[in-house]
Image 1 (cartoon, rainbow, N blue to C red):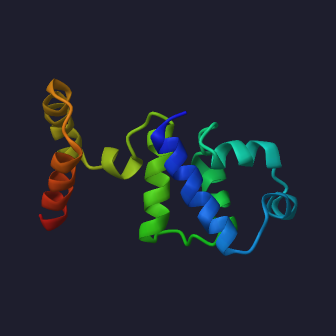
Image 2 (image 1 turned 60 degrees about the vertical axis):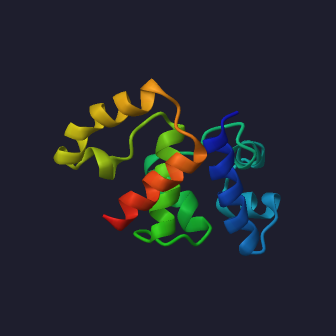
Length: 124
């Protein structure tokens, strides 16, 4: 189990519950296996990717193109060990990734340092 898997699962479950659906009712309604969805929600299995992920997000009312949709898609990509597509499609950003990975790889940043980095990026 991985923290990112768990985060995706918790967030997806919150959306399902917000729709007033039990796990079994939700799965019956959408033709999903309740055992597998339970494992996704608990972070035991990775979330689906691609079109299947888009279907799952539509089932819980996460509108495509919203910040929440992108956030969950990014979490799913990370769970699959991939850099999100929107990052990979930006050539200038991709060219800088090795420096970012090298810098982060030398020493694990603290939670506070990561928060500061995120704040700086948001401000830019």
